[in-house]
Length: 354
Image (tube, rainbow, N blue to C red; front, top):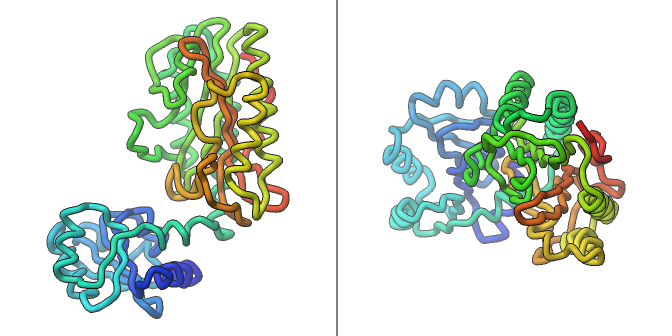
């Protein structure tokens, strides 16, 4: 935790701040070890404070590491306690609520709103974070094995989701709470698979379906993310050809991952192969993204990215081809950047037919 705090302060100093204030639970957790409703403060020298409403104080004291825990009234009371603590400091906060930031600036003249110090600190993972990501990935592999045994004709997408989430919860894997979806998983059969972020429906699997199963779940705070595409019975020659194209594209993307490589070059490795096979217009998203305490965090693995990969970054590589109203195919792994990257998912990328 001390190394994290040193890194956070170093990144704060780069933008002229000596104090960091975390409102977002991911940043609060990274800073203190406590995930809950509270405000975290990191001051020059490493002193760390949590301001929490009374209903969170007990847990904050129990779960945080080397923190002073202060009780504040929920809402305005927390803000008032924060101002008293840091009003003379050069403060950076991750808060993006316009009304709160406007109010804070009246009392804290040297305040700026930026997530930069937090994301720049979190982008490279430490050994403990990597171990948690590996554990989460192992459980996701077990869930793919479960798919290969439980998926069948006539089963609803929602029924398979229930089976998988029951297993996940038993293994202490939980929904990420990702705001852009109503479901914890993506399970998309047949034409639904052509929607990269399909919602789980009551559609029943049919013979000849391709089924995209995207498992993005949180283990002890950290998000692991992997996708496999299954076949139910015999699929067409074209579908099989497209599957092999996606598989080879992903292989090329994984092979390109190493420290000092531009993120956009990883995207290019995947995208060029698909384009050369005349399916470029059907690859409609970036090749990947950073993972950690959030589903999507820096670095972006896209053609727009200006970031170079560094050792121990955690990213996904997930090319896909989506034929509207017909089918979709995506293959995704989470990995740790090394000279020889650690691919955290071991479940086969050969087409599994159930």
